[in-house]
Image (cartoon, rainbow, N blue to C red):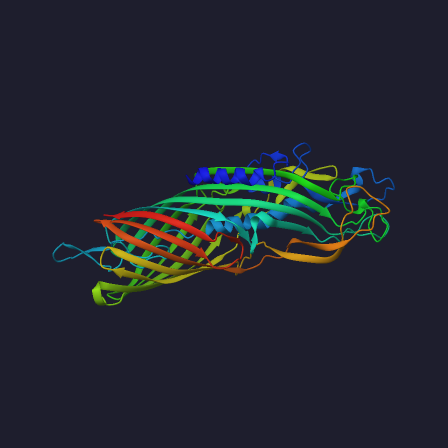
Amino acid sequence: MARNSEFFFAAVFLIASAGAQAQTAPNVSQVLVYSATNPTTGAAAAIFTQTTADASHTVQSDYTVTNDFAQMTRALNANIATALSIIPLSSPASGVIQRTDPATGAEWAESSTLGPIFTERAETIGKGHFYIGFSNQDFHFTQYNGTSLNALSILDEGGAKSAVGNQISTPATIGLGMDVRLSQDIAFLTYGVTDRFDVSVGLPVVHSAVAARTYNGVIYTGNGAGTNGSNCWCVNTFTAANPDPLQSQFGQASLGKTGFGDLLIRAKGTIIRTPHAVVAAGADLRAPTGNAQNYLGVGAASLKPFVAVSFYSKPLRSGIVLSPHFDVGWQFTGNSVLGGALIPAISGAYDGRPFTTSKGTMPDVFSWAGGVELAVGHRSTFVADILGNQVGWIHGIPSTITASLSNQLLPTGPTPDKTAVPTQGNAEGLVATGRDVSFGQYNGSFGYKLRVAGNLIVNVNALVRFDNNGLTARLVPLFGIGYSF
């Protein structure tokens, strides 16, 4: 159902730009740049400036790409890869923790709650015990840095020196709309090696779907004739050697892929265990088994050491038990194609397909979580958490900011007109920050766990995003089921 709905929404999204030419991207991570690539010439949307003197302005080789749309995908790719790497996973900790009495051999439930959902449980499951679990999450990313993904604008601030008198290039904008969805089904297996040490293996199946369209290109060159305060059209143009200050549609593209994601291996050991407090330390290792260029994996190995702490109160009235918990970890990831840049091929004055990909460092992520479990009897547990990620404390993440340039001369039409007097307007859109940045992301997690029968546990959860930094999926539902034996 999730897959079908994603393709339905992608189709609706692209119908909105039915006049644009459709492109077939080779992988999901290149959907954005292919939506701005001419299907006939293979040229990527760009701003051209005449850098070699030629009075006729008709020689394509006299023009140079001064703003390549392909390079703007780096920040979005890195944000999608980071979102994929820090998707909170349901904890592979048994809902029912059992211990064996060494004197009698009888088993008894050690924990008085059914455990957290996203935070790691400090208890281990016990020697010789197994836990199997499954969970599903569907992410629909709708915003990037607080702006709707369906209403983005990319800004070229201008300022490039041309060979036409003393004129420099003027600002230009290109509209961008995107629909980004990730669905993750993950199966976990946990085994208690000793009474204080267990290992878990998680294998996700990921479905990624991206649709993109580029449209409404505007070059703020005035009348294009060099009169009434305007530039010559040749200083800025979307098409080398041709006047083209307005372009209503560039193109569109969409693609979805399904496959195995990055394999997760977790090891955890108890350091302190008392009747009312447990402290554990462990590490997550992610192997790059998912196809990064299709957003199925991150494209590099990552390591995340962590510490988890759980507390338990004495039973209150009616058998209610409060269990505060928190954990903290730091994830480090290697170089990935999703952290690098798309490098276009060069043909004459144009840059375009095929695109190759360099590798770049993925950001580190310092994660923390804290919350409480509220057990009502032995069959029901309510869970509330606050989850935080500080992205890029050591290795930052590529990003953009919104810039606005006022009092720019709006184009008077598609062709130069010496008599036309241009009006003024604002040029606004995303520009690269010129450096990698760090930011925080914060979620609230609210869930419920039910012991259906025996050691069979089902859980439901809603993940609510509080901030607007990076890519944002505002509300993410989760369904999970687990069994220990």
